[in-house]
Image 1 (cartoon, rainbow, N blue to C red):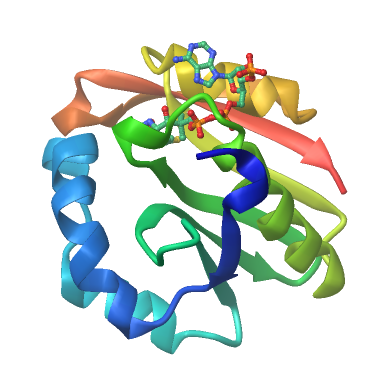
Image 2: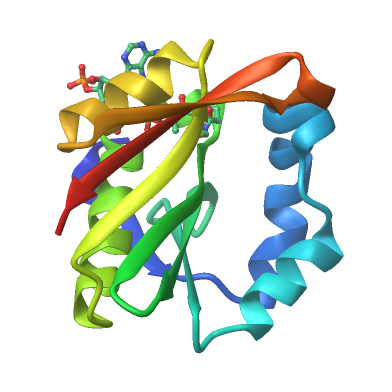
Length: 152
Ligand SMILES: CC(C)(COP(=O)(O)OP(=O)(O)OC[C@H]1O[C@@H](n2cnc3c(N)ncnc32)[C@H](O)[C@@H]1OP(=O)(O)O)[C@@H](O)C(=O)NCCC(=O)NCCS
């Protein structure tokens, strides 16, 4: 599979069942529920979710953003283990940021676990810079969040 054979489409309720096992495996105690995802998708005025899929229609990754006034927040990005390091997260992030820009956002923020080296490298490579730390943001107060920001 190459990045060229990956399609990025708007997430629909039909994608939720496919992503849930990966969500739980990737995010553990911080995993969102299926009903949480349905609530997110229902708030389409403020939120936008994308999925990446293979030519065969297999779910490869997903991500979401929320735009309020002129500021966007990247809410989540995940790529299934078998499809990593092929530029899929970069593709999803670009799609989310393009939509945020289209909706009038001029800056984007995100939080990422301080121990998540892969995600921080992804975001830094896409122009996000560290602007703060939220102590004890994850895992019941055990893990800090790095706050990152970029202009759009
Ligand atoms: C973080 C994650 C989304 C990256 O997905 P991906 O599709 O593999 O990322 P990409 O292939 O688009 O990588 C883009 C860049 O990010 C960086 N990167 C990605 N994975 C990395 C890793 N394991 N180690 C170091 N850098 C990494 C690299 O700079 C990479 O560019 P390169 O491959 O040209 O060197 C994926 O590992 C994942 O789903 N992890 C679990 C969930 C998660 O942590 N989500 C983020 C929550 S904030």
